[in-house]
Length: 207
Image (tube, rainbow, N blue to C red; front, top):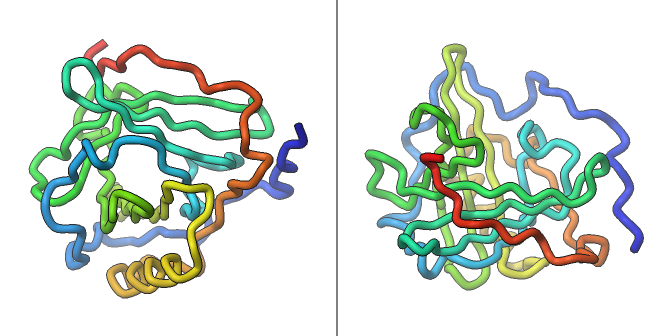
């Protein structure tokens, strides 16, 4: 099966990336109430992502599959294709974000030894059935770095919905610079796998 050609140029962080020399914004309005993980579970395809996000450099065909474990907690497997390693699947633990009452979740892909190192992803909007908008911001001693994702239950998202979501992002996060920092994630026929992704045992954060 033909694969998507590798990205031609190496991406590098620059002053135009989603970097700010202050802390994370506090005036944006995420979705109210806790995320209903039972409804959110299942597969989400990545339609748009931040092009400077280092964790996803040179990666395509990304999708996230959330599932409920035997103990009632949730895990996610991040599936994507890279020109260096073909398909790659990474499991992670999903937890409610500590101290948050909105639709924010902590996702630990690396079994971080310190809870403070686990990234928090805020679901800014979702209808659970077709789209989801994710925002993440990390603070460091020099300032902060943020990113936005648009996900879909299908490999494509209709233009009307996309337009509404982009408008919402630019209104809620005017300092983010959506049009300068986003990129489309390919989800075409080349993203259909020859083999089913690896099935992981329940991921245990404490192991």
